Length: 466
Image (cartoon, rainbow, N blue to C red; front, side, top):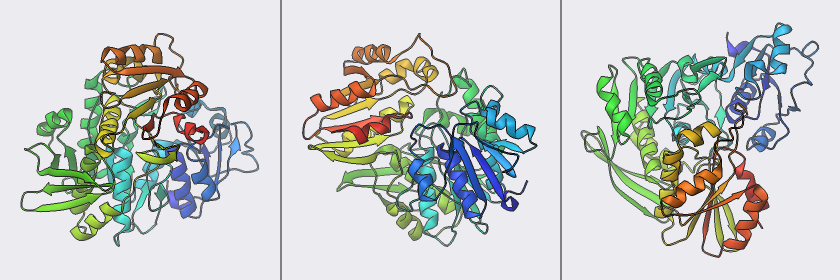
């Protein structure tokens, strides 16, 4: 299927971050876009409205007989391929693909620069997108965020672009129906792996299962391509010797091909040095945290492999101002600084909160965490309990259940609170949004830093903080 020749595409679950990105790409191609989703406010609502994209509420309003699209792309949530709208489209003879298949269709005619790993995918992909926007390459890209700063879009598609930038996700194509990893549909040219950890226990019961799918994806990289691998992550470091593809390693690790050193923070900037085999370069980024230093290093190596001018690459990295729901400053109220972040895996949470400790030293840091999915919280409970060592107070809301899972009464946030308390940290259970907002009002003081953390709807708290 040639996506560029289609006239009308319908998106079932259009408000998902990836789905919204594909819808924007369709508009760039002049393709008519229609969509449907639930009434709940999503972080992409404003993103879609800004591009003039509307949607129907619910999945029963579509009249595919009189308004028949050339293709329907469906999210994995809301029933996925079993969604009633999707089933109805099939009966009308409308071709149906999943989001993962749709992404692969957009990427297949271009050289793919992908980013995989548990944490860092969106930031590194958006860094690459901004960096390439500063060159004559003018890439196509889809990044699973609501916005990228300063380019003001999470996606763009150009017919004549050489490169396509996106995240490579190991999660299932359609959970319970097709459990193959999403990235199995992609053909990578250059791939960054930020880390490999056990995640998505509903699909990969053991770490060995996770490792296997990543290894299979890496093996798809061609001889003229490159795997850019962070060997600060033990699991990545152990895998590299077994690979038969071109690899460039990076990190603080003294055995890396590109060694990170001399990291310093100040004046809302992070400066560091990348030491390659034959030279050193000084890099400045406008984001905190070792993980963002690592992400920027990966983007630098990836861009250099494609032949971009080094000066332009460094300017592109410094121009990057972050993306929606990634260390996003939400404002100051009554002397309290508020931030928001999408982190939802223990390693992501720990790295994020350590960054606050470095970026804003001397301040009392309060994290408000909304665990995402029962399965992840249950399997990684002990890891989560150790993730809050860098905050002064850890507040916990109820678990945000995924649309693809059932309630598990054997695990809840109260269990997590007890585990965190055993680590010697002050932990508080608030549960609901209302009680969380009440706690913030009664327990914060000028000079505090409050960061909301999680992949659910926790970002909505900020509009109600008084």
